[in-house]
Image (cartoon, rainbow, N blue to C red; front, side):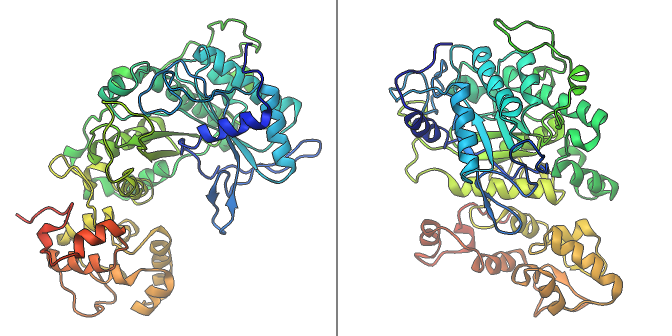
Length: 499
């Protein structure tokens, strides 16, 4: 293996940790694995990465690229082959020593490992697999590991990595084929979806043979299952919305050949069921898989983006889809200008919509349509949906079921469950709702409690919209645009005029 020479490990770490900062696919792990005598570290279900756990703790990990050398020339990427930037590569031993050294100093609780493409996808994935093997078998590391699979790598290598990593991910990068052809011509949708399908199949088979130890379901899966049981699809989702998305079936590889030989392959070629016989103490990618989409580099609408995310949740059972606002780090005529900076508000709205799909039972086609393809810049997606469906309100909180309560602005999953549990023991007042966690400054326009309202209940769309806007925390530039002079409701950006 010919790797970068002449650089200290500290210098490599400086280069490769900086090169990894644009990858946002980090989250809490969802893993629970206690420490074990004779081995090092553990994995706590509260989470890994620069994220916040439910009790407020910030949890960290070593987030690096194995190498920032790359044979691809993706126009949006700082590590593209045509860029003149410092290049470096770890050896598997160096990265293992760094991870263990940082862990022993209590700097980190796990590892997030991605990479550029060094020589070939197979060559790079072999190095990553060797790193994971050494960490688990030689250094006896039981901490959390999130590993990026390299699109185009041999399926044997993808499977091998899945038995050592807790979570795997394959970046979708851009949501449409046209976007990939334009900005990442070396990548194909087939090469990206193939390892995603393989990882999903491995998790499913591992779950069947090992129980939930071999994988845990996504929030979208559990919410969709409960919503279907409660008849939400029939109540809210029009059949017209259940259409084919921009992930066509003919581009999804459903079965992988796990017998191909990789040149110089050092690991045994084991099938999934044969590998299960080994005492790894983990299932196959037991914390599931995720992906990332870049937002704003190509001209897709928000409707297309949430439709792609919904298809990924449905067809690949992903744990998370991450959205990364496009940051223009290269000058290229095919890249858009960003006079206002990265589209951070748009990224925020997409995360809010993603939350609604995963935890609230919303479908992508409810939140947006082809006629209304982008999110409101002023109101969050749930409030925007509610003011467009005033015919469903007011909701009586003492009678509405759980999923109807979830559609009320100001009521989330926790407060909805508390309402359902509390009303079994008696009536509720608005003061009780406030103690439960309902945000009354939003919910008051959409609910009644024991037949009573909080003030005058006005179900006019314009009035409710204006009232909700007063409570919104908006970016300064948007506030200036809205309140710099007297504007009518129908001048507001992102809010369609009533017809």
